Amino acid sequence: MFEVDPTVLENHDELSPVFADFVRFARSKPECQRPISVEGHPAVPDYFRAYPYPVQSWPAFISRQKLEELERVTVGLAKLLKSLPARFFGNDADQISDFLGFPPDLVRYMLQAPMGLDEAITRGDFIDGENGLQCIEYNFSAGLGGWQLDGLQKVWLEAPWFREFLEESGCEVRYRSPIYELFRYATEVAVGRGLAEDGVLNMALLVPSPAGRTAQELEAMHFIIAHAGRLYRQYLERYGDGLCGELLDVSEEQLEARPEGVYLGDRRIHVLFEYSVDLRRTDIHSLFRQGKIWDFNGPAYLLINDKRLLALLSRWVDSDLFTVEERELIRRSVPWTRLIGDEFTEFHGARVFLPDLLEDHREALVIKKGSSSRGQDIYVGSYTSEGEWRDACDRALESGGWIVQERVAPKPLLFVADGRPVAHDVVWGHFVFGERYGGSFLRMVPNGKAGVVNSARGAREAMLLEVVGPETGPQGARSVGDAS
Image (cartoon, rainbow, N blue to C red; front, top):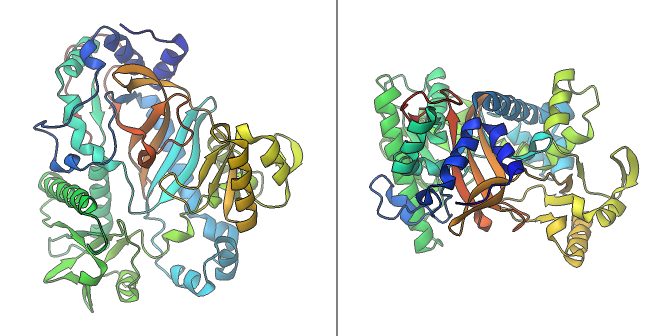
């Protein structure tokens, strides 16, 4: 039996009454309080032998009402951010070049139609704080992490203690698989553009060549892509409406551009994901623009894959650039964010010199490099010494390309760490494919243990279950499965 802070339990209840019921259920079940074990589990795919990130013992639950709010916010913000090159800069290459620092000729190349931004696959990172869901960054890339937890859903959903909880609570839950949602979306995009007229739809993940990569990296990539390939075949068998095809991994030099399309040997590639490499092949981009292959996220994604765009939303929220509804979305969902520079700005109604603000309000602020990833070049003031903070701020002011955000304190949630339930700080990763919500996963660290919550920096990952049946009250055993 463990103690539960009533305030923390309220946070669970706000997400879903089922989540709070699960915590109460787990209090008297020692088997619920142990670390999850995936080694040797018959339902766990091979890639978890090389999976580098720790996994949380408990899933999280979300109600239909909370899920609807989540969908509105995540899809709405993704759409807003994708509009900024046109909305702020009129798609003017010189203006965008000045802002992002890319050569003007490269920007002009990225702006050529079709850009593919409307169809981009994305993941927003959010914190659920006192003011609701707050977006701390958005990742517009085909190399998004978080979908790999699909391989662990049966570890939770088929565990005896979890089945017992579902039977006692009478609720019905489902797991929305981001990788299945991605296949569904990519198939619709490709079929809608006539890329599968012969009944074949081959997709490919663009990965680095083996040269210079460690044996562990190669093993992890091999297992992950092999599992994704099996999932794609399963997807086509269930939902492909007669389509057949493969999901392949390719390096840039293996691809051949022909007048009719892109090939790997004798197999035509219809959909390409720039998974862990940015494609630099103008011949393939030309075929993309001719409609002979679809490239996620295409050559233009770097125009919007920068944290500085959040500063544009925050800084200009009261301007005529946005509709009334868009302004409300930004105010509600984007924390105060500014570009770092030697200038004055508004902070909580006061006019302040930004370098002075950085120095005087360290514990309330976070600074980030606009183009950083994997939790790098992020400094949370309350977790950073005065000297380290001052050095980071000096670098940001000198080099440019950084933002400062007001820190959003996450509502603590109870999860397992070191074999016992404790309060955790949680970052939510929400996928959006085009204008469609595509599922979520969570990353977490024990409350107060770290400022940056990122898988690459030791955070545990957890899956999110959607409550689709009754929120409360015993109704008998219910079926459980993925949402695909």
